[in-house]
Image (cartoon, rainbow, N blue to C red; front, side):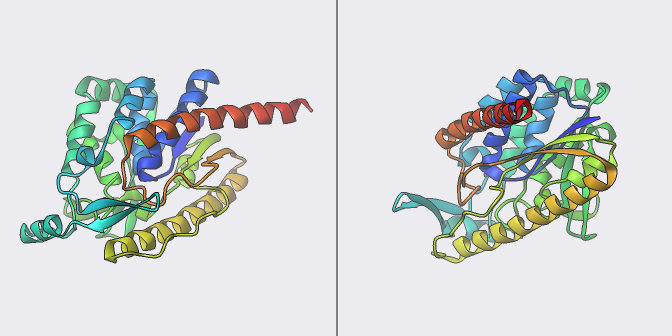
Length: 301
């Protein structure tokens, strides 16, 4: 059984889309299992449907308004680097309404429903492929994996949305009596789950460089500090997930093919710049082509 695993990474998901396009269209890989975390969960349904152009158009045309119904920050460009500043009015407005988070991402839920139709959902549910998204259950302190086979259209769209909710900047969702948030808080790269579900070869797209090349700019405000802290913690979680995945794969004789980003794409994956995301998609496509061409050359030699 061949599986595709796509990590979390916010706007960097465009790079994963490009890698997936090359693997599926040019190499002809046919996946039985798709597992995604956060931005990865947004990609996998369309990839399973082979509707790559559709999801490419969605990924390369979004902006902050496509995601946030109430955006808690403003984007500032200093010395050619995008940083975030606090949108005090929106944050105060959110707290006045009784929200537990700085911002709300209800527009993303509408976007998900607008891009995944009921007919497409039914096609996937009846088909042989399994689509699984990762969510974090904060109430039970556990990571959960939600398969399309177990839910209705409305529920599954909500699970995809929940998987992407990067709290406390995006919505905290209460569902089935529990509070849920971004799957990346628990498992950024769900390799182990793919192996548990029977995968024998896995293509793993990790939206982070294989070796750390990042030297972050000093924090400018409380939000900048929070995002830096969260990015640091998620990087550690990601590294741990990869190490565990490699260990489990070795124990089960599972083949892992990794695709890391070759360079640092952004220092803040909550900034959705459609021009940059368009370039990242093409970059992912060409990187996958380069890596597989290089591998073939090594095999020949």
